[in-house]
Length: 298
Image (cartoon, helix red, strand yellow):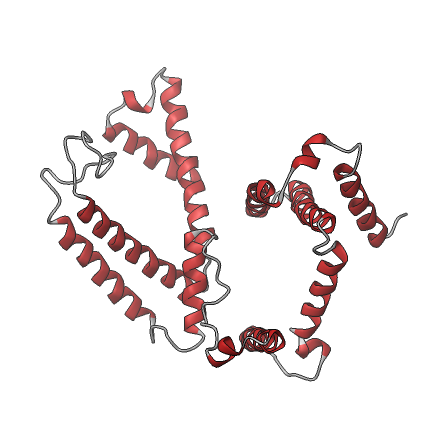
């Protein structure tokens, strides 16, 4: 029976062969940039399998995600930038260095204490790297607490990361009621801007700002303000989720799945009658929607 290490080495060697002479033409022509979209796709499929509690599927999806790491490491080794060994060494060192409460003498009995230690260690590591690189300017001007929060991640996740970082340095609402007050404030600001929306006002399904959309066209300036206010609303909602220790991405995914499930029920009932949603009045669709909710509760 092969060991875990032997299995891992075999996977690395297979990936190297796929990229090597006589390997797979598709694999050989890939670059860091062409693989990026697959990495994101595989990460989302891992999340989907976890949400569905499909453990057999999760095994395959985690393998696909690991393949992305192997792919990048082989391409980097070809360019003599780094290897899979460098990745593993960096990971092992990070796990040990950032868990002094396990591998050292530091005391941390709660998740909150662990997180504070983790953030302090990360800051110390960055400071050390700046000193080693001789970047005196950056030493005089420490990095923002938001450094390292990628703008390439989904917006809800980025907002969650940003608000979590600033909360750790005390920039936060003192209680959740303050967040609800802020939600009301941002809602009112959106309403005030909507007062300038051309008659007859926004309609369901209209594409705001597009000429001919239900006969309404808004100025780019108003559209920008509305987008800004909607963004502010979403940011407050993300903070409410954070305050409740909930992941906004996960919460919205659950709502998306719930909506899909209920709408697909509505579609199936109409299909039995040889009709489509576009053929049914809104009150009938609402009745079927409520029926689907009752089905879920029973």
